[in-house]
Image 1: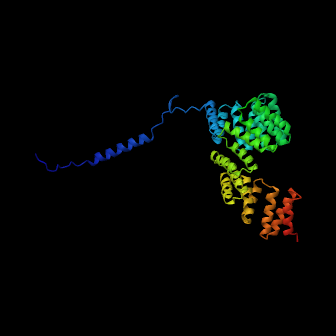
Image 2 (image 1 turned 60 degrees about the vertical axis):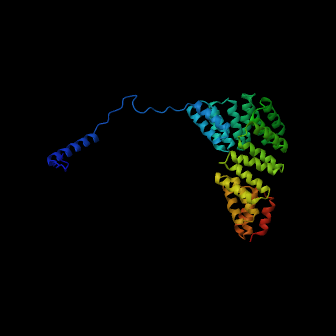
Image 3 (image 1 turned 180 degrees about the horizontal axis):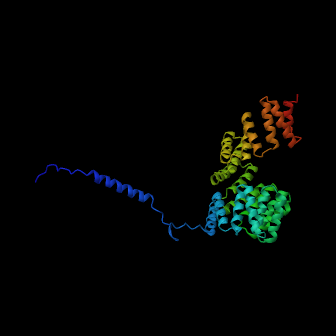
Length: 370
């Protein structure tokens, strides 16, 4: 058999041209092909929206797990799916209040009461929002309505107790707090607010016991640890306060208050090197958290870092902390830096808040009017 190379036949130029014309025509037809409209029922199947009940169940589980931000988002989804149901709005408003997002909480609670003007829990939730905003008269009105429409609702009596405590009516506050506990010994808010009433009366041991009962009922709620720690600090049990606040930080690492309160506890211990990082962590978590700026500024002032004190304390004023102490410490910081014109401005502002402010008057003696 012959194995040499086979001679190739040459392609005809005409044939090549024909092939190119056919390829071009085929490409043109593909590009210009008309789209065929889809018939009803054809195409991708739309993903069904999750019903409100599923979002509500998820939200409740997030709440039990202490995932408050996730719970709020899920309650809001449930409210969107079932716009006539006040329950998701009520629960979202309660948790927004616990996170001190009081403007959002008020709006949400008002939506709930607009949907259900005689819903006792909606009215009680609105009452608590008003109370935490310092609007005590509106809070009292909402809570009294809640008790009228829901005389056996423990939250209505618990929140009313808090309002009475804030308005300076200790006897009525204690009566309502006891009634809330009589209605439900397993109610977290009943125990928490009974603790608050005792705290307002200076009974820090009793308050701490009550807050601990609330923690036993719901150990994933960080704000309960803040309440307990505040009373431990009042009792000068700083080690216990630190332990409680470290737990609050662990449970709620994205919010400023646990860090701020932990830093303030270290401040009480005069452990300023540990206090400053906690205040900075609080500010990183929530840059507009005025309390952390104020506490950081006070710490810098004590450390005689007057430039740092001025910067932090002025930030605190910017975010609403225009207190006598903040104002005179800004003034004194300027005075110690020999910047008397600026010092006088802030010291005079402190005297507007308290005309008898001794530190402000001392500052003006350092920087007398020329």
